[in-house]
Length: 331
Image (cartoon, rainbow, N blue to C red):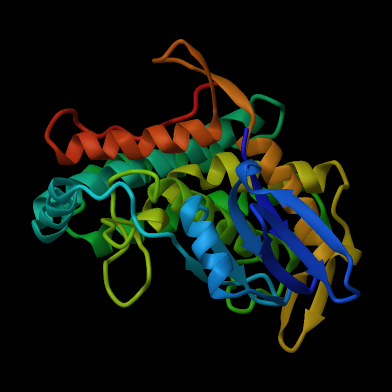
């Protein structure tokens, strides 16, 4: 199975014959067979040239760039090989028609909320009382279908997510990782730092899958299509955050795999060190490659495969073949 290549060292990424090579500042080289790589995540100060980009395009390998603090900067996406005019037209049509847009956006929010509830029920069944949070969230979920606008829908989702995040304090029971409200850009607490970094990695992971379909990542439904680079990956991420990012976060903290030394203060923010990023990425990769039994398919499939299926389901909805129903985890 192809893997994502994470680069933290400073140096150069180049092509030698038909192989990728990472050349560190001291001149040492690390050779990586290009056929083994699905995408590249660059965290270090890496230089590259046009010859390398042509090589990555030939093998359809996207590259994603993050700054020193782990924030997503941008991507190099090889030319699209799966263009389909009919899908692009249908995507635009379902965005411009507010009724059609709301149908998809409501499904995404329902999937997101139900997966948050799945996480809460999981811990509630393990003697952590989540009854109050579950009741509040179910009340909000009941009203989602009555929302008349995207703004109202996102407001409901935001209210649910705040209740859900407050429940982290019960799940983690760790004063070093206490949640006291969502703070971004820059995050000022360890839990917010992890959420921001994890969500950023999920956005890019889903972007990787979108470029392998006929869908256009620039046209989303819950998140408006405007000056931002991509929005569809943000939409689909809402469904998978509880299952991928949050569960990784719980594992790393509850098993004491992350500690204070994995964070660093800079200016007014708190960020993961390179070692902390590596720990999270390792847990995330393990989670992404975990196989679960899919109830409808009646066979095992990885979370990465489920993300790709989610995109195909959306394609079918756009074509009028099958109503889009988001993936909801069942334990």
